[in-house]
Image (cartoon, rainbow, N blue to C red; front, side, top):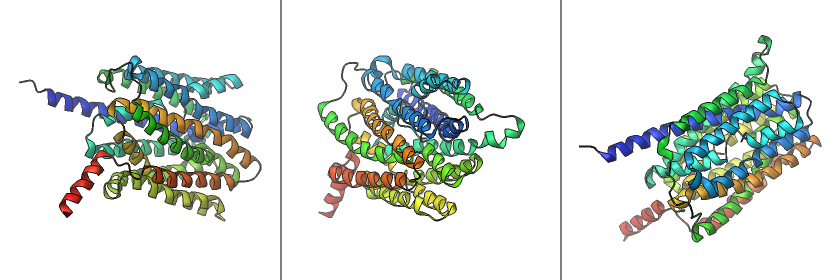
Length: 415
């Protein structure tokens, strides 16, 4: 007899595996470009202020696409939207490689969804996050997001490592712009993978009229406001600005920066594996707040180190816990929102983070240009700590369903 449940499970596993591959490809090339892009522009004679502008635009570019996801994902369809966005990424890589025209570079930054931080808050993650949340039960949801982010951080670490390849191969005539051809090729491959995933059609819901329930809107509004504070602080020290900071402060070469961020990302990837275990023990919200708070203390210490080695050391210590909150935050957000609203909710919260994060880079580059190398880290850490305290106070009484049931079960056992 034909077993529909087995077929559904097989399709779910196959879909998860393909989404892990697209996540790997996308984050790998984003990480690669996040380190190379500012160096590429500075070497080509562009001012530091232009680097700040391009950084802001690469962040802001996610906003209209996240809005598109919020209002049109059910109408257009997840698969078609993901394919179209992949093709825009491919075009962006071509523009960066072929043109040094001001307008063309601006256009490439806008359409390319190039991550300035090596990670992502754009429409791909919004859609994939919602799809993945429909494939796991409450017990497995945080673990699934842990694996999803683990794949991302492994890809990020390899992207960081390979960013030094153009300089290593410079004697062979390899130019730094080859990275943008790699970016284009990977984006096309990602699009082709989405093309095979017909099972994505309608996975996040078939209702083309409803956007979000009123209760969801209230929750999302609160989360968005708080996530904005965190993202604004993070915008001061996103990956390509950290690259710029070490490049200007200590004169580090691209090869050195590639190794530093490779190690930092590997440390991050290892910590991601532990996040679901920590969340299971102390809860999702507590994991978000505690690990994030510790990481921000070490972030503030980075520019106060008397040597570059110690600065890098503080950065590495920070990375041991800095992203453990990510799978916990994604799982928590999806848990407290009804399934029909998850894609839209993810897009809205990601948009708020994007808007807030885009404001900080020009301020950060202006501070570095003025020789105030301490302030980007201090301001970034201070705002992120304010977020940690605020989200705990605002959401400490709102628990995901599995934690509510666990508390109720524990109370019954005690009685």
